[in-house]
Length: 207
Image (cartoon, rainbow, N blue to C red; front, top):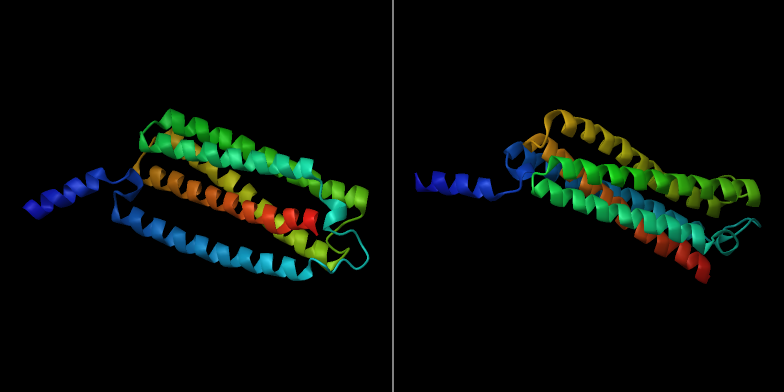
């Protein structure tokens, strides 16, 4: 009887997304998925760094990268990570309205980031003649950043789907788990961007 009471007490003190065995297992599975994503991006980073000097006579990183647009993208994405963190705080408080509000702001910032990155790619192609087929360096660059941008776009769609469920069902163990997992996903993408900023842009300005 005592063990049963202690077990129930422990469950009641857990965050809502961990309150069921299914929630536990799905979150563990999601961490494994993020580990696989880490391998994917690690491979893309390695490929880019190997190909960085293979410009085939075309523009190199120093010719292309401008600090203004890159810093704007970085600030927007990092702020979106902050707002996503605030949404998790509202989730812990079981404040559905606050959770939805911060997730909407995160979506808007994500859309701004995707727009800035699309404009960056367009500028390189239209004004510098830098495309995916120009050189091995640019192939590595566009594939790495394009993959990250596609993940951000997927995250936006995912958050929209969760918002619809939160409006319909409110905060339940299932919607809490989904909101928590998309938060992990979004923070992961922000961490990847920090590595992109360092390995791609920062080294491009220095070299």
